[in-house]
Length: 136
Image 1 (tube, rainbow, N blue to C red):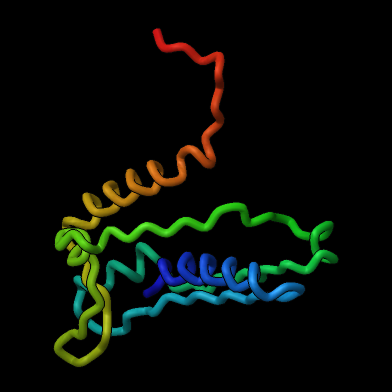
Image 2: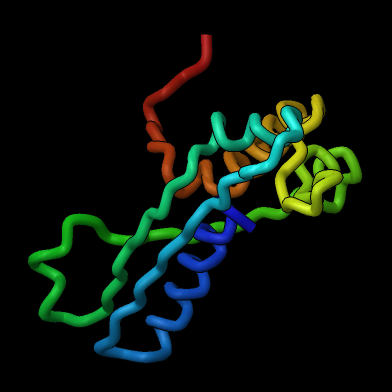
């Protein structure tokens, strides 16, 4: 699942830490590098790079003062029910049987639709509400 798996894992870890007290959760997410010769699949290597981020989550009270960040919200939206979104980026094998990712022209449209959905979902959680704001 690539980068989206990290977000799913963070949501899962948050729920597990709510049940299992005084615990750590380590999340490691990696990207796969395409090593084949199909030029259409090489774009993913350039755009997303090949990385391996990790995060350690804790619900231990002793870690409260030394933690750098606090996870407040974990929201996940899925827009793959749209055929255009689902088919905009797909994992496929090339002619040599090497697995890679194909990106088509609908990725930007799908990304914009998903960002709108995410902002609608979490906007009220992260945007300040100013009661003195008036429209012209």
